[in-house]
Length: 123
Image 1 (cartoon, rainbow, N blue to C red):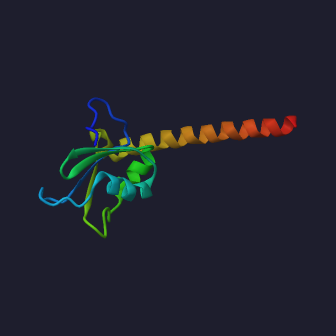
Image 2: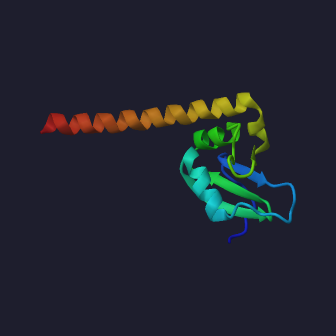
């Protein structure tokens, strides 16, 4: 179990809490990791308290899908996901960053496609 890092965190960091009573712990870090990978790849999971953790997703889209999921944690115990970065509670800020990330991914795909086409034309 690693302590959560201090300082700057990526925008794709999500705070996950569960179970209002501190005496009952349903999720372990391994279970939480296995459950949340359905939303996308995860960089790290840090324990924050007996019933809370910090999950860092690899991309903002996966984190957004996790936060917006209405049935998070079902059928076991309800999970509550909130943004670690307070500015992401503003939907306009989130959409702006999602568009930038999508645009960068499209540019990378286009560059790879041009490289492949260039290699094919040389052969």
